[in-house]
Amino acid sequence: MVEGRKRVMGQKVVWVVAAALAAVATGASAQTRGVSKTEIVLGTHSDLSGVAATYGVSSSNAAKMRFDEINEAGGINGRKIRFLIEDNGYQVPKAVQACNKLINRDKVFAFVAAVGTPMNNACFKDQFAAEVPNLFPLTAARSMYEPFHRLKFYGAASYVDQIRSGMNYFVKEKGKKAVCVMYQDTDYGKEILEGAELQAKKLGIKLVETTAHKPTDQDFTAPITKLRQAGCDLVLMGTIVRDSIIPYVTARKMGWTDVVFVGSAAAYDSVVGAAQGMDGFYAMGLTEMAYADSEVPAVREFVERYKKKFNIDPNIGAVYGYVAADLTVTGLKNAGADLTLDSFIKGMEAIKGYKDIFNGPEVSFTPQSRQGANSSFLAEVKGGRWTRATQPLGF
Image (cartoon, rainbow, N blue to C red; front, side, top):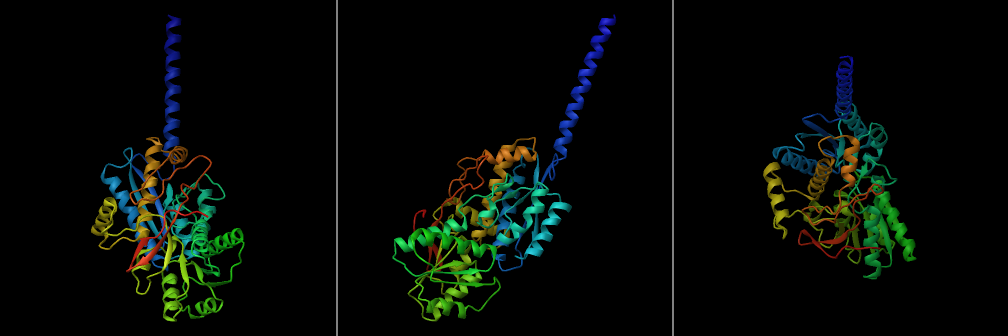
């Protein structure tokens, strides 16, 4: 009889211990910021009102569209995605304010497709202290994946590598000799300058001239005159949209035609291509441009869905935003039903040979690497639209 009571008591102890362990596991899952049984809260700080708004609005729209599609299909492991968008105005102080809100008030699980090199850099310290991953920002600065941090994920070629590839092509294949740089005096622009300096050193040449400007500048007569007087035959552009269009059109109106202008992927935008007077301008591309008559069926379908939802044609920012959201979804699915920060990191590292619908490069991650791909091609504006000019380039 005593022996029987001992066995019953022993079973009760086992049950109590098992229940306690289950409670601890449930508590650990519940403590994952931005994650509940029914919801995953993601956020972004994007430019909705500043000089890069053409990217910010379209990228956040497209990311939201992808998350909406996932929600309409039932979500991920029973959880719907709530996506919060804050305006950073392409200004560091506004970006810091937006980040603080998303981190401290909204308790987001991760940032997805945040816009701007200096804006992302400014948020990293507080963001990573709160263990909030930074996923696929709309900037190709190397700081998006270097130095290595387990919470950084970036999926394409860096600005440095892009501009080195473009410069290498025009010097070696087209015989350009007087290489110059026009760049924004920002973290982004300095990436372009550094890439040009690195490639000039590799090629054994010197940069002939450089000019710097503010992102908000609108008169480029003086810097264009300076570059022309220096005899530049290749100008590498650390510019985005408006500051790509105005200098190029200014140069052509001045009659300066014996020079090639090449931008990074930040200038590879349908707005730039469609602007009057931009034929002959080059930029580095990462994916197909989102044209309604694209030869790629999936791209045509994307354009149709985006235009129906937002009543405007998508630009390349929309492409980047959609891919960023889809890669995030892939990582969330890989993480499984017990979504924690650690399971998500493993889910992201499990991405191998990912292909987007826009013919972008294959994306893969490992526990040691946070740059998912590294190739870019040269595109040229012809007849008011971008056309691919080369296969993927190296340096």
